[in-house]
Each structure stands twice: as C-alpha cells, then as structure tokens.
Amino acid sequence: MHTKTVGVLWGCFFLWNLYTSSAQTIYPGIKARATQRALDYGVQAGMEMIEQMLKEKNIPDLKGSESLEFLKVDYVNYNFSNIKINAFSFPNTSLAFVPGVGIKALTNHGTANISTDWEIKSPLFQDTGGADLFLSGVYFTGIIVLARNDFGHPILKLQDCYAQVNHAHVSFSGELSVLYNSFAEPMEKPILKNLNEMLCPIIMNEVEALNANLSTIEVLTKIDNYTLLDYSLISSPEITENYIDLNLKGIVYPLEDLTDPPFSPVPFVLPERSDSMLYVGISEFFFKSASFAYFTAGAFNVTLSTKEISNHLVQNSQGVGNVLSRIAEIYILSQPFLVRVMATEPPVISLLPGNFTLDIPASIMILTQSKNSTAEAIVSMDFVASTSVGLVILGQRLVCSLSLNRFRLSLPESNRSNIEVLRFENILSSILHFGILPLANAKLQQGFPLPNPHKISFVNSDIEVFEGFLLISTDLKYETSLKQQPSFHGWEGLNFINGQWRGKPAA
Image 1 (tube, rainbow, N blue to C red):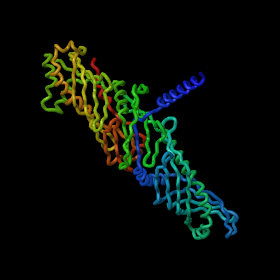
Image 2 (image 1 turned 90 degrees about the vertical axis):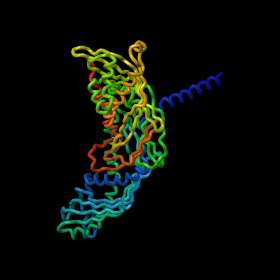
Image 3 (image 1 turned 60 degrees about the horizontal axis):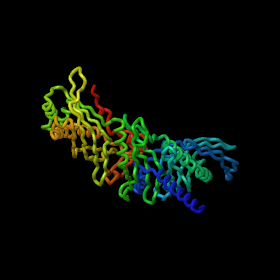
Image 4 (image 1 turned 120 degrees about the horizontal axis):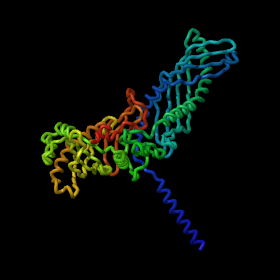
C-alpha cells in the first residue's frame, strides 16, 4: 500500500512539473537576430562612434609621484590634467560570439595621440605647461555579457577585462621643454603603470553609464490614441557561435487596458541565414494582438459622409462616381447619405508562405439624414472583406498596402425581399475598392517604424512572408549625420489607424 501511494505521489509531482513548466513558457512576438556580419560592421562603425565619444569625453587626471635619482631629487609630484585624445588607431580589432556567454572584444597594436596640461612640484622647483603623450602597443580584451533586468531592459556586463599600454612617450612643450624632455623618459614608466591601472575601471564605468541609459528606455510605449506596444525582453539574449537572438514580448495593448489578449504566442524559428547583418522576425501573434487591440479600442469604426466617399471615388476611378446615386435610385431618396462601417470581430490575420491576408468581418449601415433631423437607417448589412497585404521597406519603415480580394455580403432574412443582395454587393464592393481602401492605404503610407539603434539605418533590405511570421533581412549603415535620439526599438510612431480615421459619429 505504501509503495502504491509513493508511486501516485511521484506521478502527481511529475504532472505538476509538466504543467508549471509549460505554463511558464513565454514565446516572443518579435525576434531580432544579429549575425557575425553585424559584428564585423560594428567594429568599423564602432571606431567612428568611439572617436566621437573620446573627443567629448572628460578623462580623469593622471597623478603620481616619482623620485629622480639621477638628479638626486627625492620626489617629483606630477599631475596631467585636461587630457584630450586627439587621434587613435586600433587596426587589429575584432568582435566574436562566445556561445552561451557573450561577445568577445579584442584589440591589439593600438596607438593614441594625447594632449594634456601638466604641473610638476618638487623640493627644488615647480612649473606648469603642456605636453603630448604618444601611446603604442595598446591591448584590450574582454567579454561583453548581455542580459535583461526585471523590467525587460537590456543590460551589459564586462567580464575578464584586461587592458594594457606597452609604450608611452612624453614630449613637453614650452620654454624649458629641452630641460623637461631630458628627464621625461624616467617618468614614462610610472605614467604607464598608473594608466594601465586606470583603463579597466574607466571602461567599466562606461559600461555602467551605458546601462543607466538603457534603463531609461520605455519598453512600454504609446503608439497612438488607441494602443500601446510592449517590446520588453522576455529573456536574456541567446548567443550561438554565429549570431545573437533578442526575444521581445511584441504585444500591442489597448491604451487603457494592459490585459493580455485571449490567445498566446506560438514559437517560430528564424531560418539559418548569415548573408545579412540583421534579421527581424515579426510573428503572426504580433499582428493578431494589434488587430485585437485596435478592435477593442474601437479604431475600426468609421463613419463617412456621401461627399467624402464620392470625392474619393471620382479621384480614384472613372465610371464609378455615380455609385452613390445608384443607391439613391433604389430608394428614390434625395437626402445626404452616411456610410457607417463597424468591425464586428477583430480582423483575421493570416501569414502563409508568400501570402499575407487580412479578413475584415464588419457591418455596413447606410443612413440618411435631412437637416435638423436624426439619422435614419436605410439598410444594415454584414460583410467580410478579404484583402491581401502588400509589403515594402522604405528607409526605416515597413509600409503596408491593402488590396481587395473578395467581398461577401449577407442580409438579414427580413431585408431579403426589399433589396437585391447581388446588386448591393457590386455597389458596396466599389465603395470599398475605390473609396475606403484608398483612404486606408493613404494612412498606411506612413509605415511602421522598424526597431533600429541610434544613428543606424537599414540598407539592402528585403522582406519575406513565412508561415506564422514575417522576416525582414537587412544590412546596416552608420549615419553620423542622422538627427535622431537613441532608441532600442524605434516603434514610437507605429500607427495602424490614424486618429482622423474615427470620423464623426452621426447625431
């Protein structure tokens, strides 16, 4: 009996573990993958960034004391201040992935030209002036470990830091430069010693300063008047021999409600490629969460006047400008019309190989409204508009456009004797095709800003649709002239439906 009870308990424990482990699994809505090509380019772009940073960087004073035995001086206190790095060269620099750990940085045979003010005090003399310091044989190695904090921000740690400068040459300037240069060589060794002791702490402080900046990034950002986007990291970056993966939550929420949608993300795997620097996978779940959020917020409800639609029909299609007059002929009415379109369910997103579709289940109501009277419904119909989503990358944005594939109209049984469904299908299909969709595409031309680091633009970009996700392949280009603020994501301007799309509700 005891053995049987123990077996049952172990079975329950095993099932509970399976349940909790599966319940805790969180899959990303967006994946970003940087390859070795990105690291190689990062070395090139990084040199430009470091050069700019060093020119603006305040380097701590270099202080020390040294005895000059050949002059029989017990001590000379020296202080190098206002240190400026004027030029540097790191010809042998590399970045490489360390699987499961981080990114190894290595530089060798570096040189630097530094200008500085100096002050010397000793029992015999005291003086100030200027000097140039030439460093050579600069060596650095360390492993950059990437992780996430409790708020989903990326954080960096530097492990195994080792930095060394092998040679230093000081050249004094001024009236007594010949005198000072005569005993500059004995001072070079203590300068090297102090400098080598300072390098790793300085680098560590820079990493901490960078983490402080990363911690201020808002991982939950307002998209527009309807929605918020959560792009926080759901796990620490995954590092293999050939790439690093960032797993982002990638959920769109209604502005006033941060409740997760009633469906969950499913895993998707980026293809094993290395031709581009960066790959961004945007899952079907991301688009579904956006569809659900905008539906919940009422963003898909549109009311347009006859004038608004007819003006757009005339501009965009010859021969269909009389569509609304044909509706008037059916009802023998002369009053102005209102067309109200309301999504009855969240639009259905489908990503299949080479095919991105959006099915919009909605109702359409045609109303008349004479002066000083309330709107009166003529007819209300349900329909499903099936559209194809065209995709293109322009600059830093993913631009979408909709084209109508099918239009299925249905009427309540009570209305079937009063109206010809087929006739209205043709009329309303024309309104959607030549009126509403062009208006939607005009808004979509704003595009969806893609996540990009500070001053980095996308070049040689391509986009593919796979089953369950969208894949963006792109190279990167560092632009020193770009006037943009640092941004981990770059999604602030994301906008499915502009506020103007809400239209004016009928009185």
